[in-house]
Image (cartoon, rainbow, N blue to C red; front, side):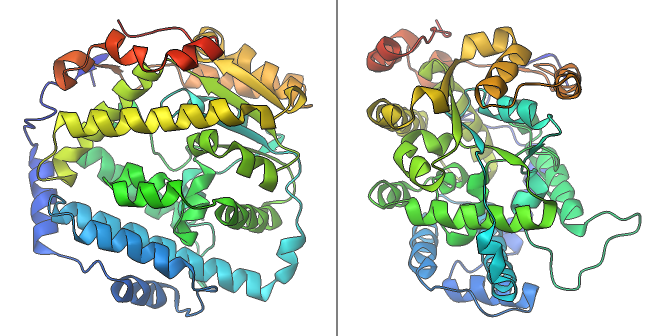
Length: 417
């Protein structure tokens, strides 16, 4: 893979053989986006039938109905979305079964978690992986976030590998085949530390569905719905995982928290929160390029104006919510992390966060984090070159004027000229 990568066919994609074959496979294997199809598949996969409280069905059907009405979805995308919902429904069955068999899991205490928030594409992923390298902390690898509970009776693979890990590795290999440049923009290998909002998936909640497909109806539902019950659900799944692994302080991260700071405080009142801050124009540029790139297999037609409008609005909503609610996290429980300072010295940033969270680095933890830094240099998978004005017809300085309120409030540096 070249050091510098520039995608010059975002809205007139030249498909690879692998992409053509994947789209043809989707066309040959259409799926039914209905509640019955999803829940029956989950029952068959797990051998279980108790989904717990039924309120999730309304949210599941909101998603399925919006996807089913979207004529621009490819059949491959419909299949991927179907598989997501089946996995979430299956996880819900497994989680419900585990809690029913051991109600004492609810007594677990999630003690003073370190939680990273910030805009998507603002360094939160690198920061959580960096801090998670500290062996004193518990984190959530992608493979376990995708399947937090093993299937009943499923045995380890030859060599001892967890079959959940293998399924995640197979999915990553498939993603690299069909969308090879995604690894440059957002790695998704099994050991990669992932967002805990994945644990809201079995409750059919969170803004994550906005990243999977174009769902303005779901976004509007999310905006007008109290997210506290879904954060409580996610916390319960963390308790389940903690029961299995033992009690250590968690390090978590999710950009959604930026617009849910009061909910986060309600559900995790003793947490320490680190908030990254980056030029929103750079964030939008990265987000829309990633969305446009994956659209070649997900959508029959998609235009630059729709993308840039949606994600500019979305980023503004995140930032205005942060501006309104930042005060709920007092200085002793929070830290603002400017992106340019983090990129200049990521090890020092991790050390500063851990120290303020009451967990000063030891020699061992410092070495573990330093080893992670050495093994994961920026641009390891190549460096993406973005073209906001060329590809989306938007002048960076003109777009940045929309976010003057944010630059006035936080020490953010403009990146894109």
